[in-house]
Image (cartoon, rainbow, N blue to C red; front, side, top):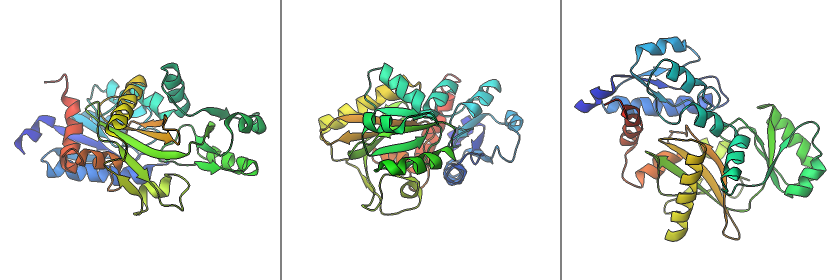
Length: 308
């Protein structure tokens, strides 16, 4: 593919130091292989092993660093400083998107529906939280992705252990009202929503957790998602507003629930979603005709905007 030379030398950033390093290594290798197959002069770049100052030797960067350091605005800030075009969301949108509470605050301020929550500290009255949110709740570290450190709590006596598990990953922990219903994910490419996917983990899984995301082969991915055409359009429009509200750009993913009354609830935004064989953005892109290689090139092409 001769037009791949327009990208110059591309650093595929993956690995890193976050709790999601293992997933990033898988995602990054898949992206690197796809770009190489497409004729792009791409090279692996793991910031855990190399100084980011070496990025001055590249023309642009494809960010496949999941979690802290890669998805929270840090690497984006480095690339801005080096004046190097990069894929995906900018510094501010990345920092907001990585913080589940800041994301929720912006959605609430934009009149977008998101599940009720409370920040948990050592001083928090857990009985008051249960009285407000009800049971079950889901306990989450505020600054982690891939469901790292998350637990469903169905009984009050299990609250403390779930908080302890979450605090191993983050100093800031939240309790979120558990929404019973159907889980969906909405991917974005070039800032536009792709077909909605319904996630159906097997019955023995409480929620779409780390194992279900990356290690199991019995999760069902519904495309079409089972919503009516009108409902799917409504959900896509809602998620596009949510994506734009936090300042997310280019490509990414939003997870949402539909409760038993048919209401949609926004869960969180992913500004550097997984790009593995199990991952959701490639599945959604495939539904509209993109091969994995074409998807990777399309994401990389976003770095050319304004430079032609």
